[in-house]
Length: 224
Ligand SMILES: Cc1cc2nc3c(=O)[nH]c(=O)nc-3n(C[C@H](O)[C@H](O)[C@H](O)COP(=O)(O)O)c2cc1C
Image (cartoon, rainbow, N blue to C red; front, side):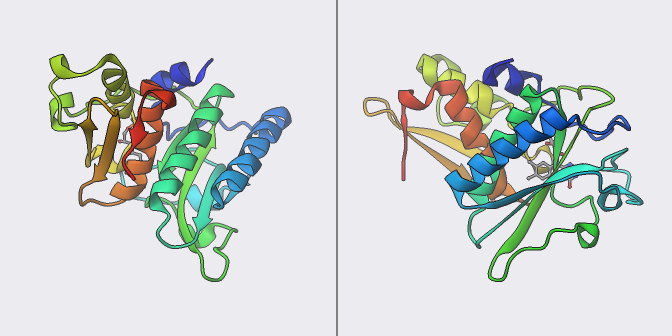
């Protein structure tokens, strides 16, 4: 499975099989985590076989079943966009390794997580990981004209592909509070902004990762 196929197949999964993740898969994911930590400077860990963070959460929305493994992401303040970007890179690697996942900002018990942020750093978020009881379901998306500054018939092909993948990005409560603009068609400069909303900056990092995969990193430049 390549990255594009993994993005197309990924949906949030909250119900997992009661099955430990195979050692070889754990090793591959840990290798990927080490690389992403080096690249990003974030502090990312893979917690295995720890059932308490996802047990006994009573709300109906965001309830998990058999979630015993999860990724934790910590880092310095102000790194939300990187948290989303690099976390989603790991979500897609997990998908390619045959696992399923769900980003979780709220519906877990943070106090039960055995990892704490280092002094001067922040505990951002977790990503539930496991073998899904199902593959998750496609969900609704806002229409493309609400998410970018071009009409579909005005878009160059690479931008259209970028938007297709950006619209597949998971966002907190499926809010999709992002807006992508093609600022210069000639110079191929694109900007991406987060609107106000819970976790919308983490969402924006996820969206930027997806856009790059869809459009091709070499096709354009982000506005700094
Ligand atoms: C930053 C972020 C935080 C999220 N927090 C939660 C959460 O606390 N509980 C939960 O069940 N789902 C959570 N989700 C999953 C979203 O609800 C889900 O991604 C969204 O509804 C879109 O569905 P999809 O992932 O299947 O495309 C979160 C997603 C993101 C990106």
